[in-house]
Image (tube, rainbow, N blue to C red; front, side, top):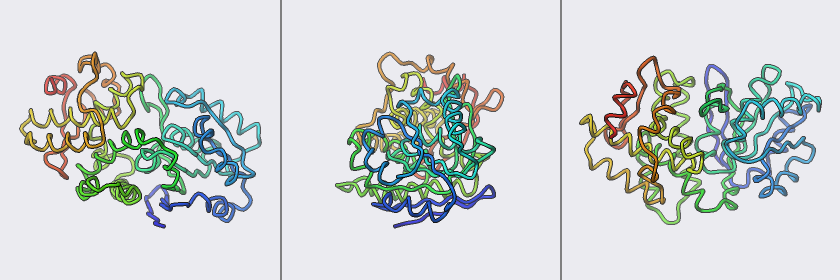
Length: 343
């Protein structure tokens, strides 16, 4: 068992990494909130896979299920769920548990932050991507015209990461999730690169290192004013690619392509040697991740989506590059400059 504490001016969030930890959650929650009711938000696909675990571990909870997929990250979903909670008499003293992948923890965190001006929130991520990224750091978002346009920063009091939940996760989804973990390796913790070469992967160790890397950054910059921007490496192009593909490409796959396009920009600016980009590409291919745009998708076709990027300031955008493995730089570019550099 390993606990990582994220302490900020806006509160404290505890990340517990424990194989088999799900079995202890109900007892832990009842001890922390003896008079509270519990609401478990999940999706129908996750519920089909983990129905026995959910029913056993949350015997008296109100269970809310929504359809699966990114399309559920809408205000209509938020309002529908808030209405159900209100009709069930749920108060701000009760606890909302998001049990699922990044879509579920995003929606649950968003609702928890605004329902009656805030209620306790717990995240139980079931995907590797959510374990190392979406559930960590307090960002909660819903889509409006573009990805995560509406959002809050609201820390879960607990993130319970149980690596045993990944035993039911198909290998292709593990591989897709590695896009974000490779990002941590090439920006914040190059020690992860050695872990990638080991067979089989020690996922619990990789999860812990990834969470530690992200928490180190978020502790210093919760609201993404400066240092946290480093976590956006690959995301300017990646989010646009993800949306342009109508989410046929997973987040990790889109970020993989986005990182390679960012390397191209860095090389055009003479800030990165081609050998660094080649090393990153080799790592991504180790996990069967794409490194080029899908057939039929063009840089010009991504521009309108990139105009809605949250990292824009006026006419420029804060763009993250790596100059070498483990070293980053944030440069300010206009979209036209960015597009010209990447072509």
